[in-house]
Length: 201
Image (cartoon, rainbow, N blue to C red; front, side, top):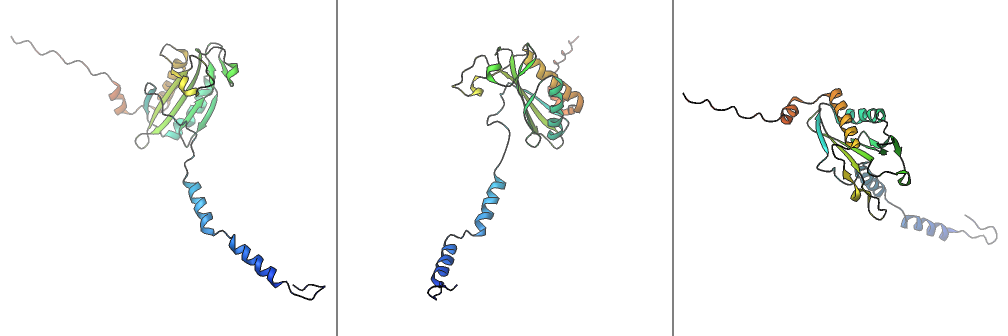
């Protein structure tokens, strides 16, 4: 490029700019590495804790994605509302639900009866090919403390709790829909008592 006033060429500026561009040039391999890391990073909607060992657990004769999809409609039929759900992750979580007034509670300030308000979580995990291990966790909070994580205050509902009964109804509907593998049925049966030995004559 020629300077109109002095008749000189701006060659140094061009060389300097080209060198500066090369100095800050990012190799394409770095972009590929970023894409690879992003693709391999697990993204899940599941909570960062495991279900309570006392939660309901059952084997269903269906794949996890079918169980998760069916749960979405069954939960709505019980007047509950799905708060989180992901078919790929095999996870469904309801919003808080007041079992006495039969109303969904979206915010903490709406919960007036902690003991009667429940949340139900479902983990649908692969068992053997074509089968699912479903873990169902109905929980409530006996008290509210904003300084502590929600999970620390949760307790599993007892069998007499209405929230547990709702969870049990949902599990029973899934059993009717998909069935339970024969092996799982046999494992769940109580062992019969041994027959008395014959009395010698």
